[in-house]
Amino acid sequence: MLHDKKIVFLGAGSMAEAMIAGMVKSSNIVPEQIIVTNRSNEERLASLEARYRVKGIKQSHLTFDDIDVFILAMKPKDVSKALQSLKNHIRSDQLILSVLAGITTTYLEENLHKDQQVVRVMPNTSSMIGESATAISPGLATIDESIQLATQLLECIGMVYTIEEKEMDIFTGIAGSGPAYFYYLMEHMEQQALQGGLQKEVARSIISQTILGAAKMIQEQADSPTTLREKVTSPNGTTAAGLNALDENGGGIAIMKAIEHAAKRSEEISTQIQDSLLVSSTK
Ligand SMILES: NC(=O)C1=CN([C@@H]2O[C@H](COP(=O)(O)OP(=O)(O)OC[C@H]3O[C@@H](n4cnc5c(N)ncnc54)[C@H](OP(=O)(O)O)[C@@H]3O)[C@@H](O)[C@H]2O)C=CC1
Ligand SMILES: O=C(O)[C@@H]1CCC=N1
Image (cartoon, protein in one colour):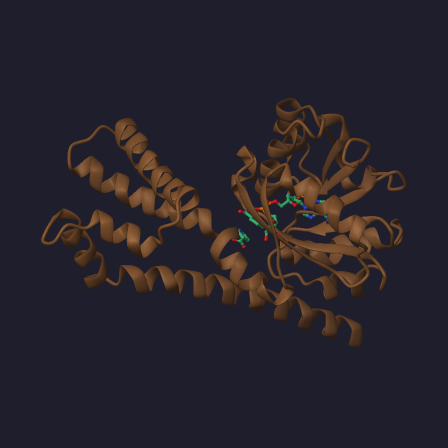
């Protein structure tokens, strides 16, 4: 299904690069199938061309007819202009995937064609190594074949979860933003490891192996996180001391708050963009 498809990224930033890297690394897509565009940063396009052997062109130079999948990968604030410039060039049967936080399928349909085939997507930057947790929610006019195409394409960059669109905000809080929480955790673990006398490279390797091992334990056996935590924790031992400090310093609550606020921000972006649509349509 994928081998004859032509895919265009509108946006050439971190998320587009992570997806391109993952797709090219998988054996299901070849670089010749991918075009990456932006409005003006030619140096960035040249660097993506050199690194991944994809074609980089300015969005204004793009020809639209033979494209099967457009992947919107600009910032949410730039989406309105991007859709305006796309609308008169695309057919409703061409598939639009949007990775933009907070941008709903309804917004995309209203600003393209009412019967436009759209899928809202939330990947994360682990796409780069084929390890994203990616959610998809199709729009109203999207046919099963296009959902299958989107799923196969996104499986090149990791696991794909089909969810209700109302679950997108919380998914974004957990998985879209999620890698950042783990990097933040690692930054703090590393800081303390250095204070404890370890060399930076050694500390980084130990920390990443510890996180990887814990994640694999969850994936590869049946115990819950709670049971696994209890198995690490000896009465009056080192882990109990560490976990008490986490609790006393609001560690668990801080993690829940981070997810709550990220999800809320995703919801807020939807409202803000929707409001600006209402304002512009009443002008
Ligand atoms: N970073 C992440 O971890 C994740 C990001 N996302 C989503 O991905 C999107 C992109 O994020 P990120 O990659 O971090 O952002 P960046 O700022 O790194 O990249 C945005 C890119 O969009 C380009 N751009 C802007 N307008 C247009 C346009 N009309 N046509 C073509 N290209 C355009 C910019 O280049 P130029 O200015 O030259 O046009 C730039 O290359 C966001 O909407 C975000 O919500 C989703 C999941 C995870
Ligand atoms: O920070 C952001 O808004 C984007 C969406 C999810 C991850 N990064």
